[in-house]
Image 1: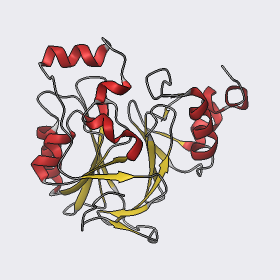
Image 2: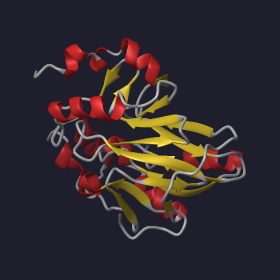
Image 3: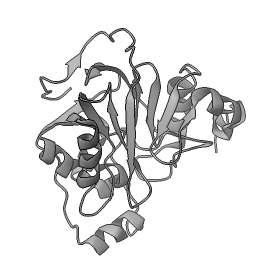
Image 4: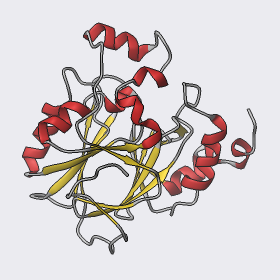
Length: 249
């Protein structure tokens, strides 16, 4: 773990948080990335997940939600380093003076996002249209290794390294109720594995060891699309079948 913040505590996962968790989302203009805003309640601290591509940044829309519920952001969590999940992390981190958290294997993508994208692909074309030519990581970056138990904004969070979509993809179990799945797991699908640092073999391992081992009742908050549950995906997702997981294609 990196330099860390006094607002983040690593240690034993606390007991279940009894009150309903406040969850809001802002969908980015490009690629429809879900930027999740999560807090234990109104009038409390919160954290922001995957602030994507909304020019000039998604900060203004996040502020609307934070102000609506009187929330104080204290951290940004990044499920992986693809640009559609990290584009607005610098203005978010600067605007609230908060750290960004990302798995160590994807940290380099904060300043060099094209390392995990296809040259001339949609993301690069959008950046050219927007006139964005360079990227800078936030002043404070906390590296994760994928086996931490954190408490952020009073909520227990279990970090699981989940490579396959990118080398540093991670999923986060929040309050034993929700799974922030990034681009590892969607409603009826999974993330692509054909981009640089992706791996179909690693994705199959991740699905077996990090997704199928989770309890059925977890509500899945994906990087794109609507919510689902582990139980629902276990029953209907074709990528969670033995036929797919045992294949070598």
